[in-house]
Image: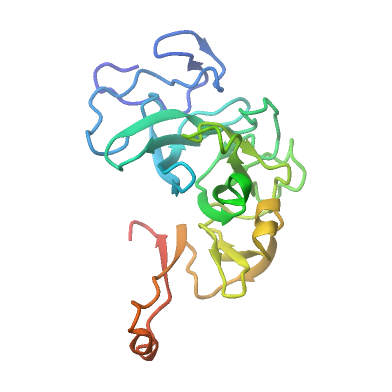
Length: 279
C-alpha cells in the first residue's frame, strides 16, 4: 500500500489472505487488496479490505433474522475477471456495522466451489427483493438479482456482455448474517441485457416487474416464477428514463379513515428513482 496517501488498491492482480500476508489469486481465501483504511469515517461505510468501493448494491432488511444488509461494489475479482464484485456489511441498528467477506464472486459460487463463465468478468450493481416463499419454510425472504458481465469467447449468448443472474442465501435458516450466498441453477435468468436491474415491484395482478439501465422492463408471472428464475421481456417503457441505478418504490396506502380523500386527490402510487449525471 501507499503509506503517504492511504489510497485503497483497486482490482489488484493478486490478493492477500490477511492484510500483509500471503499473496495469491483473489478468491474466497484471499480477499484483501491492501491494509484496511485507517482513517475511515465513523458513521459512513467504507470498504475494510483495502480494495475501494462505489455503488451500493441491494441494501435490504432481512425479516427472517432481523438484520440490515448493505452490499456494494468492491474492487477485486477472481481470475479471469476484472471486477468489481459484491462486498457486504451488516447491522442490527443502522449505526454499528460489521464487514463480512465478499458475498457474490465473479465466476464462482463460494458456497459450493462451482465455477461458471456467465458472470466471470464482474458482478455489477444489482438489487434485492423480498419475495414470498424465498425464506425458510415458505417465509418472506431476500433474493438478489444482479448483472453479471460475461466474455463472448467463454460464454454463449453474450452479445451485449451483460446478463441477469440470481443469488439467494445458501443456508437461510442457519446463517443469521447471510454470509454465504449461492447462485441459482437457472442462471442466467435474462441474456443480452443491460446493467443495473431495479428492485422488483409487484403489480395488482400479482406479477413481478423489474427494469434495467436501458428502460427495458422484464416480468415474472408469480412468486414461484420469480424464485425459479423464469423471466420474460416486456419491452422498453417511454416513462422510465434511461439512467443508472433505477428503482421504483410503491408509496404507502391511505391512512385508515381517509380513503375517499386519498382516492379523490388522484395521488401518485409509486416513486421512480434514477441516477443521471449526479441528479
